[in-house]
Length: 506
Picture 1 (cartoon, rainbow, N blue to C red):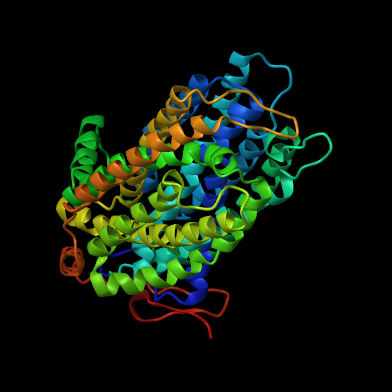
Picture 2: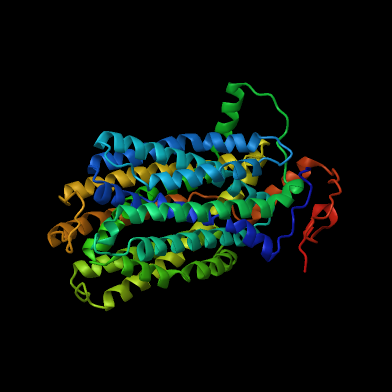
């Protein structure tokens, strides 16, 4: 397809269908989050802190090393189904199976064997997840080349990510980890986690297949990889040229520092919920439900703020506000300015804070994704190569590594404050309040300082609307005036208008 071809005009149905695929990423956000996996491995499986941190770190490093290779493979892959869709279809079954077996622990394994089993499942799940997510993300720049329309498209993607995250979090805490006679503490029930794995696998599989099938009709409008023969040295030099884009490095630098802060917070969230705030899994589920509308508000607000402030300033503003919202409740508790735990006001305060934080997070994720999409054309102008898959993989590489570092640092903090290891199955599971106070005093300031540094790094991003439109014009001129092929109308009644423009059905 010529660079001069006009991309499809996207209707609401198309944006929803594309976004629906990120429900699977939301499922992974629960199943693979350091919050869930750290708590499960420490309190339910009973693995030592250091071993848990190492397992998570190793799986993330392997994932991060392989992701750029997946992105590059996706960019250069040639088939009658295009560059992206074969990967999206192929990954669905491995993701579902690995999700099931991750949360269905084998009985009777010694500590080292159990750690090896968990590590194998994590590697398979993260690798298969990359085979889906990277090609799926890479569709966005081609589906929506317009500077602002791609923000709206990606807003729907992040909405469905949060939707999947919220639904699976509610199911995990409110349904699968319910208390019973055998497990007065539902959050420590191995059978509940196993049932959760089956449900999570089913939801992820359906969302991936539906999204891939719904966007398959756009394959004739997407760019095919050119036939090229490159040596390893030539390919390596080309990759380095693409990844040395200054604006990409700014976003990656922000992720490098912010990812460590996020990893620390996420790895400690379960411990803070259950032992600092003394919440039950059911209350956590209710708080999560209350925060659920934040996703929709973030979807609406992100494109509006992007138009008003431009993308970089929107991202910096949202980042600073989110740092403040994340620190306030813990700081007020440490200062003795909140009601005691057990008060009905505590869940209300935490729900409000989570709602605000979630709105800001969705806006931030949408804008960052749109900024990476803008890098795709900037890199293409500078290198002459379309490399959306490699760029999205690179953007995800540093946060994955640093999330692992943050998770390991989180477990080190737990050991430093002498948090007790092992699962408690009695009616009461109490941790010394002094231990929890020390945990908050160490982890909260560390996260805030790291996030402030990350905001400073983002200042070096250089692409605005004018620069993006100049890049699009340069690509059109470089492509010449080739006439795009005449395409048959899709079977659903949609039509392709002039120059390949897609017109959705009424």
